[in-house]
Length: 356
Image 1: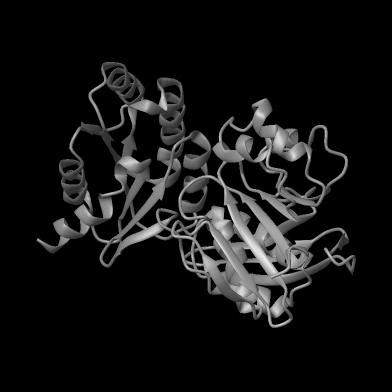
Image 2: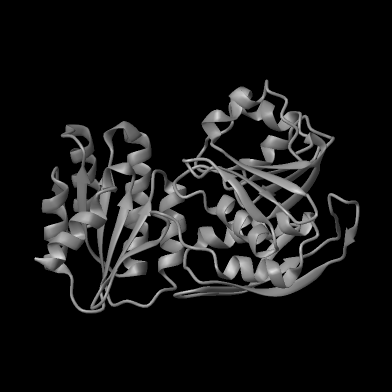
C-alpha cells in the first residue's frame, strides 16, 4: 500500500455511535469499496477499491483535537459536525483547523462552528445544514418513522480530482428517525460527492445505514414505544424534542437522567429546555434519575417544576425510576429516556421489567 494512494477523511464528532463516520463508511462500501481494517472501537476504518484506491476514515473526538494539531496528519477532508454546546472554542482545539489545507465540510447551523475557520485561508470550505445559506442543505423534509428529504447542492464544488459538480438536487431516504441523522447524511453525502461517487450508490448507502447506539434508539416497540437518546447539554435536548414533535404517539412519559458532574449551570439550562417543550410535546410526567444525592440539584428541580405546577418524581435508583414510568404508560404512549451514560442500562432493565 503506497502512502500517496491513501486518502484520509477526519470526522470530528462527539457522542455515541459515530453516526457521520458510519454513514460515510457505508456509502463507500455500497460504492464498491471493501473494508480491509477496522479497529475494535469502530472509529478507524480503512477501505480499498478494485482500482487500488485506499480510503482511511478516522473519527476524532473534540477532546483529542489538541493532540492531533502537532502530528501534522494530512487529511484530504475533515468533517466538522455539530460541535455541541459552547465547546471547542479553546485555542488548542481551534489550532487543528488552522493548518488544514484540504476540504473542510462544516455544519453552520451551530454559530460556534464558524469560529473554527479563523486564521485559515488555505482550505476549501463546504458548509452544510438546514440554513438556506449553506452550500449543502435539505429541502422538503418529511420526518416520521423514517426521514425523507431532497439533498440540495446550491453552488458548484470541486472534487478532490478537480472535477466540477454543478448545483444539483436528488431525493434521499434514511430508514431511521432523528434530526441528527439529517445532518450526518448531509455531511456524508458531501464527502461522497467530493470523491465523485455515483449518486445512486450514495442514496443506497444512506438508506441502508443502521441506527446507532442511543441515537434515537428504539428500545421497545409494541403497545407503546420506548426511545433512548444520549443527551448532555441543551442542544442535545432541543434536537431530540424537535424530532419527537414529528412522530406519532399519544402522550410522553419522560425519564431524565442527571449526572451531577454535568454542573449545575448546564443542568438548569437542560431543565429549562424540558419545561419549554412540555406543552408542545404532550409530556404528562417527568421522572428524574440522579446518580448521586445532591441538595442543590433537587432544589432547582423542585423550584422550576413546582413553579410551573408540573408533576415530577426524583429517584436515585434507575430500576425504581423505570418501574414508576411503566406504571404511567398507556397504549400508544411514548417512554422517552434522555440522559448521559448513567442511563446505559435502561434498555436491559426495561426489557426485564416488561417480561416479568
